[in-house]
Image (cartoon, rainbow, N blue to C red; front, side):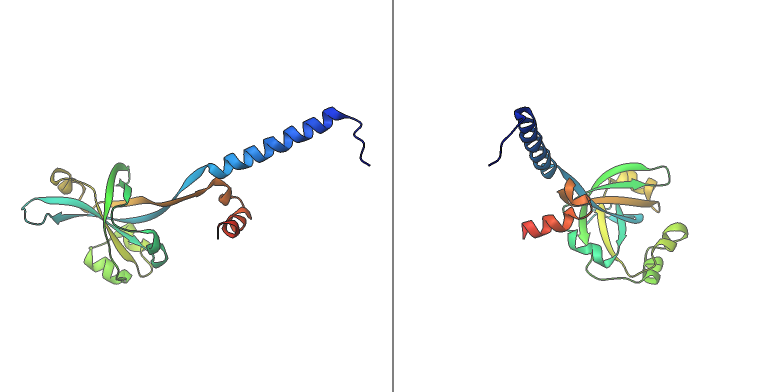
Length: 169
């Protein structure tokens, strides 16, 4: 038969255990965004049925990143070496892969971006601006972050990711 000699230790143990489970539950409820990053170039594009032009970002992504991308997603685009931050929307996700040589010739890529594209890529078109900004930004290099989902903060810890996947499905 178990005889407890020191009841405050038992009370402390139960309070500690409840606090531990509470902290774990709270940590499970915290979600962090899952983003993918791409690099590209700003190009001018004619607006259908109008003579005006608008600025769009053509971003290059590797094939394994395609699953999380779809039209309508919000995007944060950084333009230039001293980033000008603008928001945009994914207009189109191209289904066909293009080789690095095709990308260089189609978009007249030079310098840094031409060296970054080293594998077949697909392009994502991001609507970012009005006619006033299109001539200012056209030809500028850009990078973008697209949020494709969220995950529990605990999934970032080694080992927890597999544990959480097993419990979900």
